[in-house]
Length: 373
Image (tube, rainbow, N blue to C red):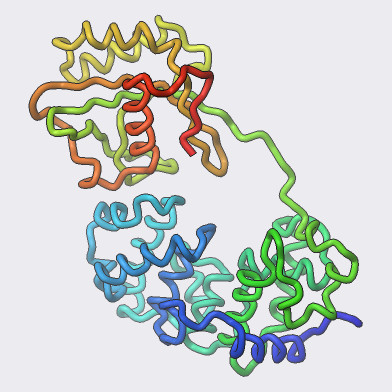
């Protein structure tokens, strides 16, 4: 049998959604564009179970888009800290401000106007328009791409221009005039609960009998994976300066990058083969910058063992970061030190601090690298 298309495909999914789809997610059935938008941004490249707690905290802190727009950016970043992909948080705040300034605090109803806002692409705009306002708008997030690639037998990496255009053509042709929000939710739920990346539950799929991939035995092969390319590997020496309170020396990250808007320990790029002379130059600059002359002997002792210290490895989607760490404890209250919980910090700060303390206790064998997870 050939795959279903158009209204026929949509009706099957709408019926399935009402009986078997997810119904208890907190942003569902609200008709509230702010709540739908917030969930859609958080769900980009992040699993539902992770998002739920962050979503609840954001709504408690900022019940409306106007509340979010009025918040200091640092507060928004701190609430987001740990969720990753921090550009989303910066766009979230910028978008809220524009919704207030341009649309009087109400999200616009058209896909075109929604797409004009920071951080809202075509698929997110379609989700907001259909789920909140009942607009006949298509979506094409990661779950939907996987469903379409398998069901219609589309080979090729989904982000390639020609493949992506084909997927959008399918999305636009299938979205129904009636209940487009229910249909789009069904597509997302089908990808999340049946047509999963691994171990898909094909027997529970409402369109299994017309699925090309299932018929050909290629469900596990589609969508075609992204062509692999080597991730850059970056090496750093970082300074973990801790005062008597357990507070850490943290600096705001103002330059563009993955940590922009967050606070992190001082760190400098170095060679993967950094010798003691290279590391000493960096440490000397920090001694002068942070007034650590009285602790220079302790720092020199730390430096002497640094070339033999294992690299601490932190893996991100697009890069692999290696750290060697100077852990310096200073007496009293030190300028520039903050409780880690008082500032928006990336996960790496917590991970480095935990691992370096373990190393300092000598309970981890010296090896070439330690994976921070």
